[in-house]
Image: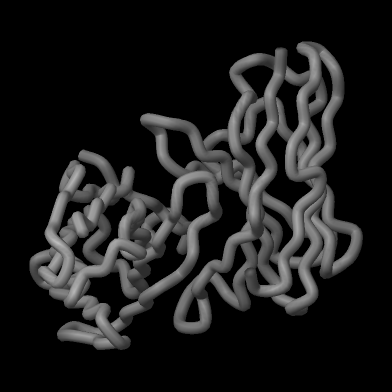
Length: 115
Length: 112
């Protein structure tokens, strides 16, 4: 993995509790992304960041918020977890979005179960 | 129409054969195309990127791009059991602010 770590790697929580997932990179890439992967839906973008304190929504952003206070860290928060948010969450990084050098590299993932 | 479509699979090939994976995309303006390999329970791993029409070879992998037909493919030559995985096609969607759109994936099984 291209210098990307995610924590925790596994988490079980109860409906209604807040949950924060962390992504940390050592590549100094500008762009960071949060995806979720579910059977039958593939990889879907939740939120992404194009710089410190600069974030934008993806296609499945409802119920999620993000923050990026440092280049290397991108946090995903589930304000009040629901069973529909049970999924595998992947963080990804890239140097750019358009043009070249826009390859995305993925972290190891976090498996979240909401009971 | 889905933004990125892959042949549904699963695809089963004998060891040593060529595995051929296909992908079509809807955004005619897209410029960047990627293939990821994902083993069960693991994260997607980038194996090929292609930006220009034609073929790009890297070891046993060849990516082929035809922008006029909005088609990108991946060939795996001399398939090995270690190639058994799900392969994801991804396209940078110019029409969606260069966000990456993924196909559903094609699962490949290489029979020893």
